[in-house]
Image (cartoon, rainbow, N blue to C red):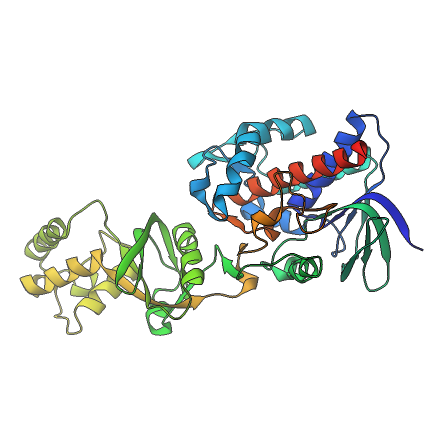
Length: 417
């Protein structure tokens, strides 16, 4: 049996859930009865939402600005002016979710549970009589006189308005396979280059494996063809494949953007508060005062032990037994390595390890209400669009903002018609 709806939302993730709630609320506010459905490929909505923020759901960031975004950023300015972090926090409060600002402007649910965010959406969908149709993997969309014909392998839905919020290619194990990009091209849209972002960076295995499991604070700089491009401070996590941690995630987008045709390196300054000369002086003092200290433990009081030993090993292939036997030139080499612990980058991990998709449908193909300029009645939201943000709640803020804008606009267009 073919079901008919006024508005269908493809995708039960952050953007799709917000779009459905916003559309239903807009119709209710205007005393218009509208049939709205969320079409979700998974057995339940919100699976990816539950995984965000390590299960705590970093909803937004008080420092929202286009400087934290990449892609078609100029088109974001009006949207962020309309939907500020304060607006988003207020909207969630009106839905029954209390939020709290924590470190670096990050905003989380007060109870620090992503499940609470999903619960309030489920309650809202139920109370607003929005139907949820799961196990509906959309494989075709056709424009019709009625509006849109949306098909899965076994079912068909007709809708006057269609909001596409099916997500990108990141986390395919949670249901995001990128099929939305192919479907949108059949409706007249284009798509930029897609690549995984906010992801671990791969380095040469021989450099990575000895450091597996170690963590160190650092100032990380991405270097392309010998020139520094961007520096981010934070904790670096060393894995068996390479480098991880928030600061590395924020550099990973550049790795994908630059591609393998460029020589890419990441340099770690492991003691950014000190100059190379100051570090040399401290190491010289250690050598002069701790006569029985093994040479490979020279940096134990300064850096993570694994990292410190690897730096000494890399800087000094021929180690004496004790630190007191290290010559000035050798201590200078260690100090230099602390400030320039460099890794050749061989790429990034795969889509299943990525937090977001970089690239997507260009924003000049939608209007200020997220309505398609190629296919009237179609609205886009979330990760499908050519915008991606840094770590810290920026990507969810984009999902909520585009979800509200598209949902309200789709509802208003029904009412106006």
